[in-house]
Length: 155
Image 1 (cartoon, rainbow, N blue to C red):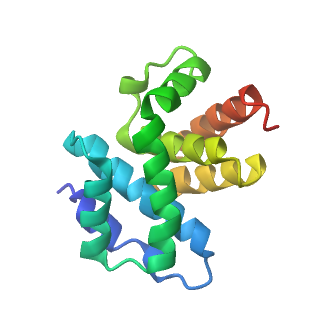
Image 2 (cartoon, rainbow, N blue to C red):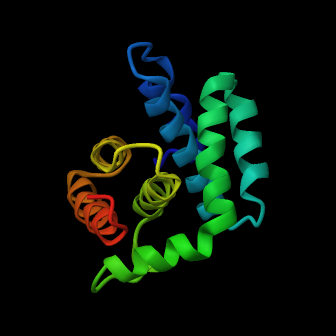
């Protein structure tokens, strides 16, 4: 039987691993919101994020950092998707799985903010893809985010 996205996230070890950095957990929270927004087809990303984070009782610091990424996607989604289309040769964005598409959007948003070193963004995107996608997803995400960082002059 297929699990719902909510149970997938609620049972995720990411919420209960105190050794993980708050930034790492925040990226996962942003991924949750983007995934739910993508799957539901909702218009208001910030509202979807707030609802999910309220349901899960997310800490304020995680919310603040995840909120930056979510707002970046909300405000610059067309540009982010355009950047991703340019570096995903032979792949249309709508053909990608929702997890992969969401991981790429989180990484692209973080690269656009420019506060985190590109290598860290790439590594964190790979970890998210490994945790919630597949090994093949992680390889694909690695190639795309690396190409995007190079295109943006961040590497």
